[in-house]
Image (tube, rainbow, N blue to C red):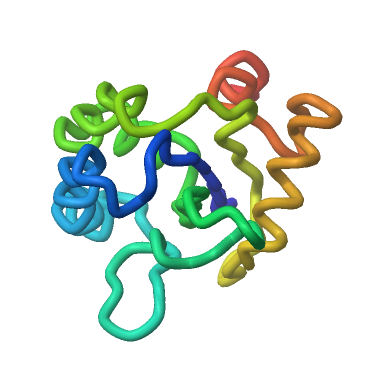
Length: 150
């Protein structure tokens, strides 16, 4: 069954601050790698020519909050990209430079074939994970590794 993922972040400084430029510069390249990755199905992008979702205001009144939302064939495909794709790993390694800690910042859940989750649905799943903890309904990579069958 396909898997959806949301990960969120809040910039430590204003989004347009020059300190965030290395992150912004890496987005197109990393997104292009995701688009070509084995198991990739869909990702959220902004309006018009935007190739990322950084301009989408997911939380009213919080311009520094950004959301990444995508759908993958399965958890192993997403995990391979997230943790073994070198360019993505390099960005992950520097996230503390750009983003304040948020818990939880990542949620995974199964979606029906062909379903494209909305930002509202994804934020609800993230809130559910924060409120209730991981379960078969919404989980983390760690929970999935510890509880998968087979």
